[in-house]
Length: 247
Image 1 (tube, rainbow, N blue to C red):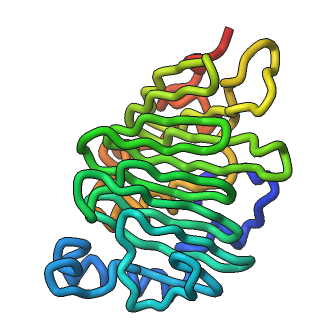
Image 2 (image 1 turned 90 degrees about the vertical axis):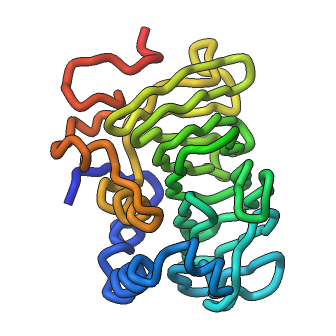
């Protein structure tokens, strides 16, 4: 198990991918051909559903098909994993998100998050964004973890687990190029004159990012390289290199 730090989350939440029914569901999803096969055969693109989840205000069923333009709300102890096109999402409990439409029903242009937490992996494609109350992240092919702390004035946490992301919070900008968890806070109020500040890696593991990546036949950067780095939030495989926002 990779090292990780917790903030307002439980160990159980981070170990969801170890549950037998999740492993079985993921194996079945991959063996059946993933999203392309599900779409062609008009099957559900919901890989796993647990607890009380609403799809556009109605209780979600395992046979539902999530498409861009839909709104998802998860209750306490609830979670849902699904794929749209070449992107996959694990929505944790107490989250409210919208997957906004791109050029087609099967293309997500914006993952809009009001509350909660999402692990997401994005294949290469056109312009895509993750938008929270305090952050806009321009996504290329990458795997990320995003969390909105609604009890902290909707301050947002964002980890570019691997890949390239363009970040904006107010007038602050940063280009994040990460091979191993580069993390940021997007503040509701400036800290030290900045809205975008460095963070440590919290509330997610290598293994769950790998799990979500596998649903869209993607490998994380550390899987490709065959090694991991120091999970300090700086985003590099080798220790001692500075975070891009470090002064």
